[in-house]
Picture 1 (cartoon, rainbow, N blue to C red):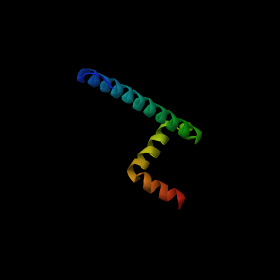
Picture 2: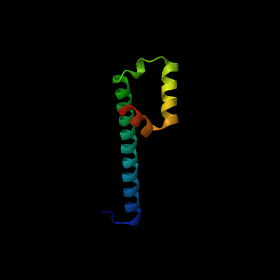
Picture 3: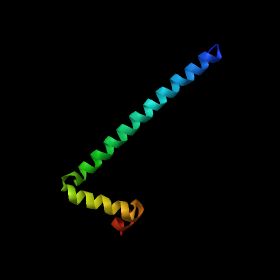
Picture 4: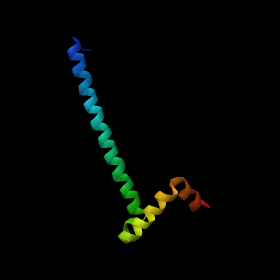
Length: 72
C-alpha cells in the first residue's frame, strides 16, 4: 500500500492502464478467434457479394432467429 494519497492514486492509475491494456488484448484475441472460426467454416471462401448478403440477412433476422432456423 502506498504511503501517501498521491502514491496511492498513481498506483491505481497504473493498475487501471494495465487493466485497459489487458481488455484490449483480450478483445483482439477474441476477434482473431472469431475470424479463424469463420475461416474454418468456409465462409471466407464465399464471393464478397454473397458474404455481404449472408451477413446482411443475419443482421436483419438476428442471431437468435438464425440459430433457431438452422437447428429446425
